[in-house]
Image (tube, rainbow, N blue to C red):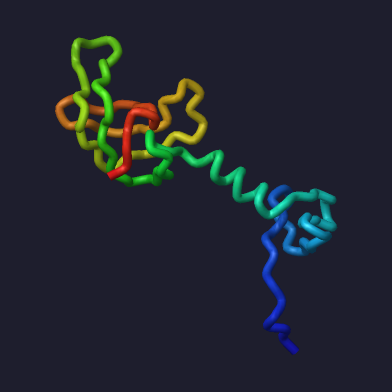
Length: 120
């Protein structure tokens, strides 16, 4: 018989076990003994998300606009404020902070920092 009142708990973020259970305010995995709070998981996802200058989460394929004149390193070109950039690609492990890969009309392929754009 199926119990319809039973809540579905998330899989363990460490080992992906489906046998997690609640212990007070914690979620516990019986297979790897990992313990976490449901809000911790949401905060980690939110912290790893790439956000624009206003704090909006950016996604692959979004369109953004540049909020500041940006000099192109190694050339005399400048990306003007208000320049629209379509179909962005996100770089998750950007060590230098340039976490957006895109093509800008008239300039070509570029990498931008998400702090200098806003989502359209």
